[in-house]
Image (cartoon, rainbow, N blue to C red; front, side):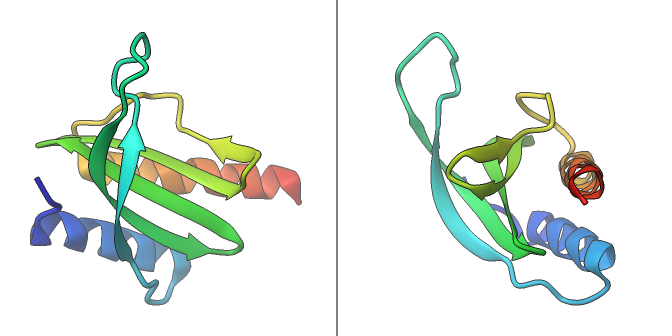
Length: 107
């Protein structure tokens, strides 16, 4: 269960539009606790990028299920308030908007 070309295009286009220039996406793997009541971690494919001193990760939990977060370092991790999304475009847009809001408040 990897990201499809269409899914990667959705992420790439949305991120590029947000920053007004091409941003390099990297494929990675993450380990997520899909069940908050279980200590078991599940390996999931992920897309990672950096912009404005911030790191972003979108993990594919299963077909049409995504998890996202942004972080600045080991101690500053942020989510969107939702455990998962079934619409990738909404996931990316929400992640970028919340990070922009966080950035604006921090400045």
